Structure formats: C-alpha cells, structure tokens
Length: 332
Image (cartoon, rainbow, N blue to C red; front, side):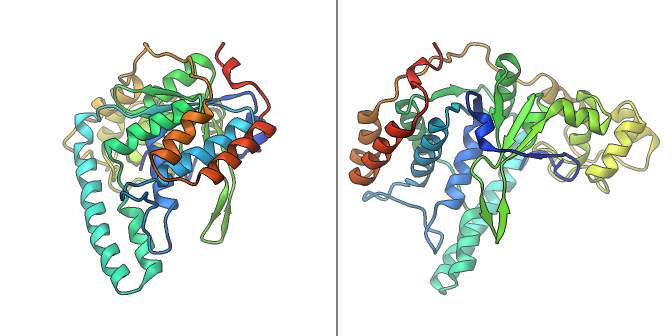
C-alpha cells in the first residue's frame, strides 16, 4: 500500500531513454507483486509449469529486465527482510483480504464471471519463499545484483540510492519518505482500464521545495495521511489537509495538542517517525554482478520451468543484437 501522498506529489512524465546509463534500485517485492497481479489468464489463473508451480513472476522478470538491460539501464533488486513488529496488524489485514478475495475469485470463476473473477484474483496475490528464491536465481543469471535488506526493501533501496546516486524504482511513494533522491514509477508503461499509463519520475528535493516543507515534515505528513504502520491515517485527514497542518505546526505533538485531530492508534507516532528517519539498513552489501549467462537463464526458465526454448533463445539472440554495452563492465 505505502504512504498516501499521490494527491500532492508532482510527478513528471519520464522518457525511459533518459534512464540510459543510470542505475535503478528496484523494490523487488513491489515489482513481483505487480507481475503476479498482471500476468494471468482470462480467469485470473497465474501462469504455471507442468508441475503446477507459478511462473508469472519469472516471465515478468525476464522480459522486463531484458528490455531495461538493452537500454543500458543497470538494475539492482532489493528484497524485503523481516517486517517490523508494528506492521503486524497491516499484514494480518492484508492476509485476511487476500483470503476473502481468493474465495470470491473461485466462486466467480465457477459461475463463469471471468471479468469479476480476474479482479478478485489480483487481490488474492501472494509471494512464496520458493518464488522469491527462483527470482533471485534468474536475476543473478541475468547479471543483476540482488541485495537482501534486513527489514523494509524500500528503506534499503533509498539508503543505497542516496549513497551511490542511484534511482529508486517502486510503485509506492515510501522511498521518497525514506529519503530517496529520485523515484521512478510505472517503468513498464501500459494501459489500464483504457487509460494510458506513462513512466513517471519524482525528485525529492523538487517536491520538498514545491510543497515548502522539510524532509522531517514529509515524514509527519505521511504519518497523518496513513502508512503501512497506521494504514487509515488520522481520522478526518487526507494529504491536502495534512500538508496545511505540517506547515502550520512544527511537530505532530503540536498538531494533536492544538487541533481537533487525535492519534487513535496503539503504536506511538514517534516510533513510526523514527523508523522512517533511521530505518534498519545494511551497509554491508556487494554491488559486483555475475556475468550475463545465457546458458544459466535457459536452464532456469526452460529446463526448470518449462518455458519455450525457442522463445527464450530467440529473445536472447535479439538481445545480443540490440544491447548497447557490455554487461560485465557495469560494476567494474
């Protein structure tokens, strides 16, 4: 879900060609959930191999990253670690929603209501440990670095982006709140419900300047609107009202002391603020990539998961003709 700032954050349309030579630090779970939601059959069923194992995420990762690599865009995937305890309520609520959506999906599918079935199927999406490990195996075979975060992947991605001048890539806005200098969204432009979706780029400094707030104000603003740790936000407040309050008052304490708005969550908002301000991240990570290995890619996709040899080999041959740089030199 992430923080609820979409109504006040200015996003600039991005030409993907502008990313050539840049490095994207990708929120792996966010990206994989996108793929599992979108790469499905008409009835909502995921792509699977002959053994019934899900392959939608592998298909998405292969073709999306092949496209990025061809454009001289370097990619690093950051995987979530242990979720903070204060996220348990959110996780339990999400699990409940998914279980309910799964039951509705099966019911509508049996009734032949495929459009409605597909809608519920997307909500019922989940990631298993096997899917995560297979994703890492494929990504490394493609010469893509995989980083394991100790906690929230977006916090680790934001930390690395600040340190190395990388761009963050996620659909959620949390990375900006964690301090990422630049966030890229909708990297795979598409059409949704008949509406054309364009790639977007958000510059944190530009956002703070235009809103006339500080990075700490941005955290407070997010807490008022709602985060994964207090999903509904403060009752009666949306992004626009919250923006007015953080500009009028210096702290959340002052807001709750001087306005009618009240904090009604079990968790202390100071703890949420501290988590966004100083999230758990690892400084010990390796950015050296393995070589792009066509044989290994074919082994993972075709031998292990029944992908078409002809189609994968054709894509790899086309990639060889169109790639711009030698992948092994990226992190040299």
